[in-house]
Length: 189
Length: 189
DNA sequence: GCAAATTAATGATTTATTCAAG
DNA sequence: CTTGAATAAATCATTAATTTGC
Image (cartoon, rainbow over all chains, first blue to last red):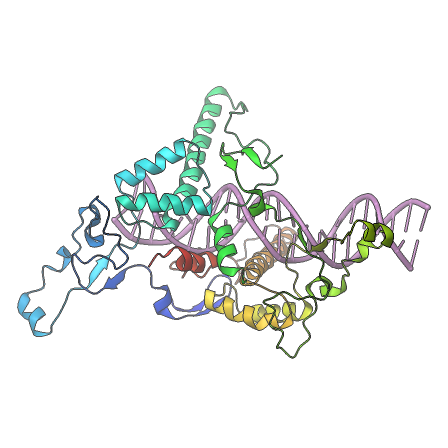
C-alpha cells in the first residue's frame, strides 16, 4: 500500500519489501534456543532473546486451541522485539560512561563498550551509538529548557553557563558512527 | 592544537591524529601511476587521479630549481584532492537519475550506481549517497525560496503546491546510507 | 595574461527534529 | 511519556568560478 508511490519529494519508490520490513521480525519458534553467535561462555545468564525483560512473547498465542495447531502443524511465530531495550546494568554502565565524559565515542570505543555490555544482554554497536547521540541531545535540550525558564524568571537574562554552546569550535574531528562506517564499508581498498 | 581537549559538549578528545587528518593527503610522487584498485580494463580512458579535470598538481612546484631538488633528493609531495569532484559524465548520469525520480537510493542502488559511474573516474558509494542527499536538499530549498518570493509578490498567500511538504508521510522505509552501513557492520551475526 | 583575493558551489559532517515502539 | 531509531536541516570546509590589480 505504502510500498510503491511518490513521497513528498516526488520520489518514486519501488523496493523489495523483504529488505525493509523492520517493524517486527518473525522467527522460527525455537524457544530457549539462543542465537548461534551467542557467547554462551559467560558466567552471567544471558536470557533468551524472546524473554528479555520478562516479556513472554508466546502468551499472545494462547487463545489458539491445540487441535487446530496440531492439525495444520501450526507453530506460533515468535515475534521478537524490534528495538533494543537496555538492561538496568547496561543503562547504569552507559550513564556512568556519560557522566565520566564520554559523549561521541569513536568507532573503536563503540565496539569496546558494546563488547563489554554484551555481558548483560543482547546489544549491538548501533544501540550504543544511538544511545549516546540521543542522550547527549536530550541532556542538552533539558538544560536549554531549564535555562529558558530560568531566563524567563529573571527577566530574560543571557547568562552564559559553562554548557552553553558558546561560538562553535572549529575543526571537530569526525567521530560519528557514520564516519566510521563510511570509512569501513565504502572506502573500497 | 585542536587535537586534544574539551569540545563544546565537554567531551575529552584524545585521538590518533593519523585517523583524522583528512584535509590534504600527501602521497609518494608517482605521476601517471593509478591506484592499485583502479580497474584498468575498461575501454574508456580513466584519467590519472592527479590530472582529473585537467589540473596539473605538479605545476605548483615548478618554481623549485632542479639543483636543489636533486641535492636533497626532494620529491614534490603530490597533493591529492581531499574531496571527490564528479566528472562531467558522472554528473550527467547522476542528474539523469535524479530527473527520473531517484532521490534516496537504497544501499544496493548506491552500489550499482557507483559501479556504473566508476567507468568515468574515481568514485565511492558515499559520494553517491552524499550527492543525492545534498542535491535533494538543495533542490528543495531552491523551490522553497522561489515559493517565498512568489508568496511575497502576491501578498503572502498560502498556496499549497504539489511539492509543499504537506504533513509528513508515515512509514517511510529507511533507505539511507546509515541504514545500510549499520546493518552491514553492526549487525553482529 | 596571470596569480592573489574574493565569492559561489557543493562535498562532507553534525545537530535538530520527527516517528513510533513499549 | 519515555526513548530507540531514522530523517531532514543546518553547518562546516574545500574546491571551482569569478573578480581584481598589476
